[in-house]
Image (cartoon, rainbow, N blue to C red; front, top):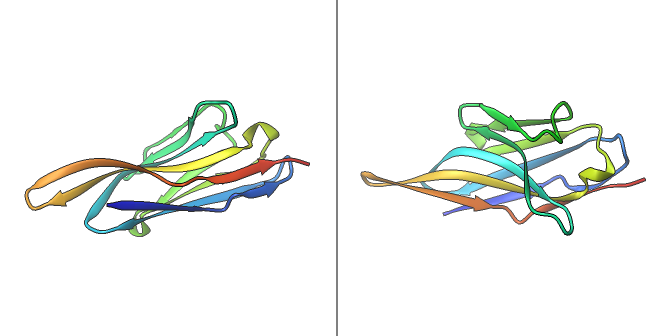
Length: 123
């Protein structure tokens, strides 16, 4: 069982920057990948960026060149550095993790969502 705790959301002016953090906690688990998604009012949740335990990244076009995802595997944490923020970036941002749990000789595959943190870009 894993829980994700997000932090770093808030109000920022257009052109500003914000850094989101997410930490996974639990016992007897291994992270496969962590990601950030976002959901604006009236829209579907969409991928922002993803990073595997090995450091392979994937970015949505909306964040390419502006957002950087990074991870600290030792801390089971992932950050999203968001630069040049625009009003269109306003959304609830959700952390997501794919992970495994080793139980004896068997391995279970799971996923978990954080509760979300609100990012508002406005002047």
